[in-house]
Every structure is written in C-alpha cells, then in structure tokens.
Length: 90
Image (cartoon, rainbow, N blue to C red; front, side, top):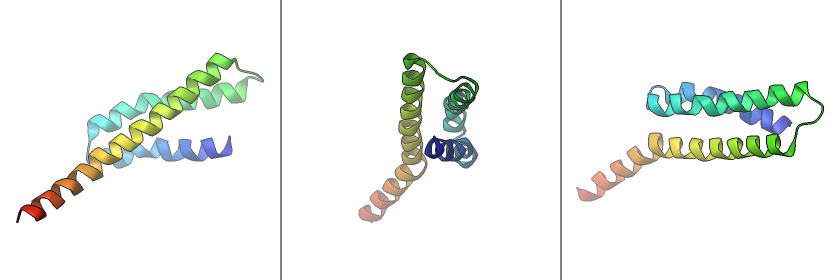
C-alpha cells in the first residue's frame, strides 16, 4: 500500500505538469485520480473489500498508468520525434 500511496501522490500532481502543454489530457486524467483516492478512502474505512472492488480499482490503476505513459508520449515524445525528423530533412 505504501508504494501505491507514493504513486498516488505523483499521479495527483501530474495534471499540474500537463496543464501547460495539454489541458485536455490533464482534465481527462482527473477522473482516474478521483477513483484512486476513493479506493484509498474505502480501503482505510472498511476492514475488508470485495474481490470486485479490488479488481475494479486495480483495473483503474493500470488504466491510469497506461494513460500517463500516453500523455508523456504526446507531451514530450511527439515534439522530440518531430524535431528529429526536421533535423534529418535538412
């Protein structure tokens, strides 16, 4: 759970970093973050959660990781590759 909490704090700050470059991506990540914080609240409030709840939030966590990698590619990868392509053309 401690590694999850560290990831959650980093993921919570991610929209702030994305806001300047891509506001749509920053806003699209907010529901994922809200669901992950909901899971933390449920995990702390109840002694046992059902298998469905754990599976759902693991799926949300994986989706958030995939989304974060896509956002990193869009914000930093595409401009870098476009710059390299332009340098090769000259």
